[in-house]
Length: 253
Image (cartoon, rainbow, N blue to C red; front, side, top):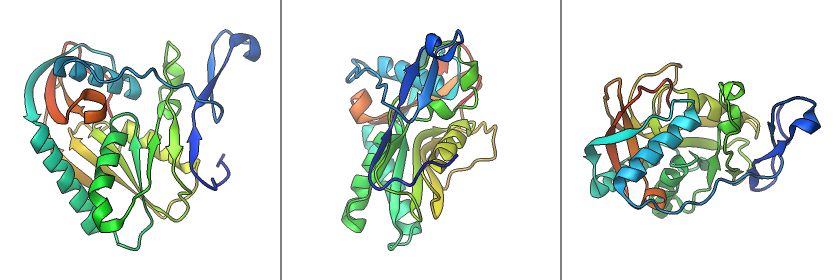
């Protein structure tokens, strides 16, 4: 069911309903009420720790196994990653009409950092671009199969998406299941004129017919490898690395 059109910025999280209130043995999460915010852990102490934590959080978000990771090699350092962000921003600016009502929507929690950086690059050409954030946890296609209550972040839509040109932003595109969930969640907020996808890295391995409109870098990885993107406000710096997994992921972004 479509939610009423928001008149301003919308922030939506979740609330917990205990087993006694539902008459069953499980704890439920209900969208549209107060937020359950993940703990703020600040910046991580080392690149290796940041890589492992980033892959595990993305795995948990997308239904993958939380495999331990080990850095194999760096693909993009700080300077190269920032240069790639500038190139992505230029792609968007060339392709999207100047008169379009552009809104950038990043997928929590590294996609929203990338969206904010792209917005800063676009500001000199387009002025301030509205930037929002999606937490897709409640829209995962394996949500009912989760054995434990997941951490649910906040979805924030800065303004009405009706008749807007939306660009969904994420760090790594893999199976396409995260993007499917993001599209489903966005549809609850209205009917955009157009929705496109921008990713910093496309690592292949699609399970759904979803492709990005704007891609920073295509990286091929082995069956027991993953791509880890580092963002400054979460990991302390920008970068892209390939990491080895001790267990192969079952699903991806």
